[in-house]
Image (tube, rainbow, N blue to C red; front, top):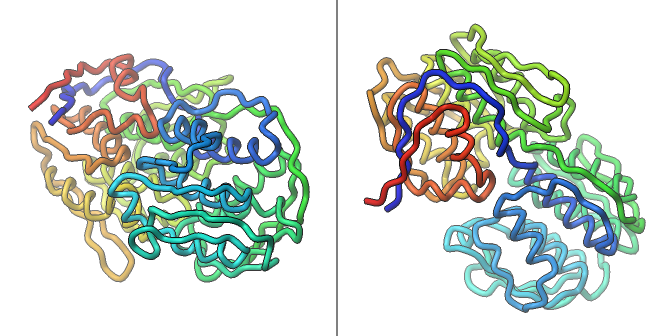
Length: 408
């Protein structure tokens, strides 16, 4: 077992040079580029493993496509290969085979795709046989499971002869990602209308575009956490915008309550220490990837939290609710569920050191790393961060931390 040991450091400063480009934006524009004829000029694509996989696999002529652990890649390519009538088998890691995809497959089947499950119904791996032509111009789809299903259908919709209207049933989660998809589709020439309970997308040809991807706000969230927990912090984050398409840019607002001030200074976002509140109430429905980061900060700072909108965390790279509960207990905190509300019970006394498991989840590793401002911290399987932020540990060194890799 490989681990990374981080020596406690309460003071950090510098420019976070390795902050990756947005994986969410990158993977969408790669699909849109392919649908527009693969002649666009794309700048600053993410170097995250998920995006590297998308770049490779979208052009892969092999019949078997291995998406590894990349959920976005699995969902977007399922829709892309189906509607472009490509015979493919899509598979992935054992965890990927546990992540449901039935809602998307059912929708694509209704549109005219012949898709078959190879192992367990409702889950990868699956075989896309053919697309026999559009059979429906409207679909009903649950909005409370994964916005990636909706985004996948939205992006292929303009290529359908009749376009597509998606009726969203129930509470819609991660709505900013749906709005991001619509905004990016417009860059490539396709209009859409995103309303409260439905999305209307007329048929239209995509056109190539030139586009530059901004930095990743999900990756930036960990630096807000470092600043919140440090005694002193002066950090600069490049290529971010407070007017971002990314829903996770809301971390700037959340962290104002947790002791971090941020402002734009030219092309850099500067973050520094500020006063914090004693409690935090937040609905993570539209930004679930921030829940781990915020939970760890509250736990370590003695801030009681009342959180909602965490349901989708159970079907991520791991069951993130269960994983959070287990790892937070190592520092004397807990996350208690009561009728779809989670109470964050903070630690009363932090240990001098702690070891954290990551469950093969990149966000578990990076969410708990900021505790190194308060204690000596060890994290297993450090290479897991390559999924979204390959230079994360390098950036820790650049901002003042001493790290050592070990094998046990």
